[in-house]
Image (tube, rainbow over all chains, first blue to last red; front, side, top):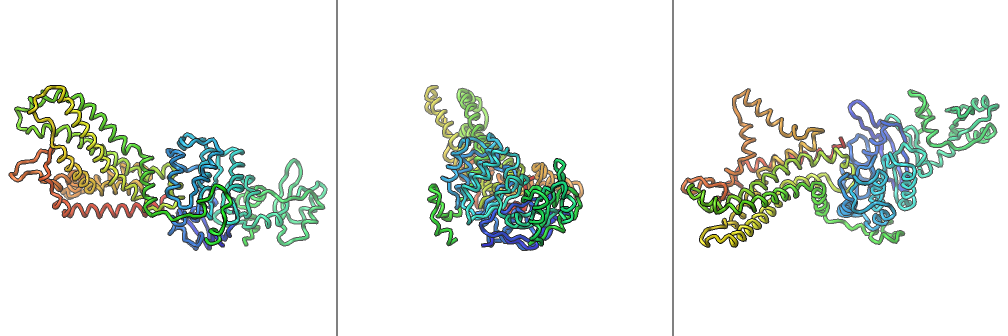
Length: 299
Length: 313
């Protein structure tokens, strides 16, 4: 089943194009990470998917038009927006009561059992909780909802490493199964590298990269070249090169070159790059660099 | 959906998880109203606090009543009005407080949720903008008037009990009247709060609309433009249609809903309006009432639409 289908999605704020013709198709059971610099259009895309902003173009989420049918859609879609937006005045017990009251697919016992593993007291107000606890509370509410699509917009912003790790562990172990779909945006790329099934880079409102993690791993190769082979390696047209501790690290795109892997293995240590390194290579170091456009072969 | 319902729930904690029964459509409304009361506890605390303070003052004053009655004897006030005064002052005070609470509540209702970004959380739940806006309007137009009646009636009954008790110990002569026609007053109170809520509905709904629209200084946006237009009208055309319209909207309910002169043409004292002086027929057939309600409905519809587009500020 297709969970999200967007064709030619556009959104302008004044004269700035936040989304410039985005095409996107997401199947059930995937975990898609949308990665992009600040202002790239990630949140705009998510807000359009959630029916929070009007847009141009075709967009269907679970077969519905999000802008016109937000309240029905929210029976099957959950989201955690960037930095805890739970109202500060609400008590934990009130939050549970309220969501149980308005949401037909909320399983209160499940939320309670998740909260029991934390230090959160029922009588506390959200303003008395630490940032990490607020996120835990929000996650407890959301995970207890039997939703088809979960949208996370910078869910772990400002959390320490332990909370972040715990967050994604809970998500994978206690929540995710093949009938659910998750879309997440984050700047903490290293946290999600092993969580995602699909990866998307977005820059200036356009999709720069869209691939599954299997494709990602077979397509991109990072080679730490032995000093004596640098010239030979450069001849094979890496699309990015950086120096770490005096050694050259070269990034290769093997899309059209399946022999390349053996060739490169002879020149140095070969491994799959981290998402963060690929991101920096494609969008990072030179502003105005055309690399993003030329390399990003959208499916 | 079918594949979902065939699943055996894996989680031992999720026996209800397989049956997402459709909730009745009134449930989101019920919980939205409760949510408003959780967030805005001043809705009931402010009138309760005022009632408590008033009761304290009344208790002290009880010991002066016989003396005051004698002092009043020279005036043309009838004893029943003198007796009714503290009771009707209590009602007026609580209505005034409820009006102020309602105004400030309405001004914040659609503004606060954008200011603290919690609108994103509310919108992540299957509650429509219509339900949300109606629940907020319902606080000002239904919950507050009900609270006014409940608190005033309770307060007045306590006052009556207290003055009865004081009279027992203070060996007043049995012939002296000591209680106003409280039941009649409370029926008039019920009528009065209903009339007031309907008459002021456009004010509350306008304030709600502005609170959903303004990015900051909602109070100024709500109040200054009408005043400014009235002033311009006054200077440019030497007329004051808008000014008198605004004044009428604030205070006009009294003349509209009550006969302020009795059948002999004698003005009725506002402290005790007998049932015979109510004019519901005239009030409910007055065009200003219905025009005001139409305006209120337009404001609410606009607020619902606006909330769809609104983002955190």
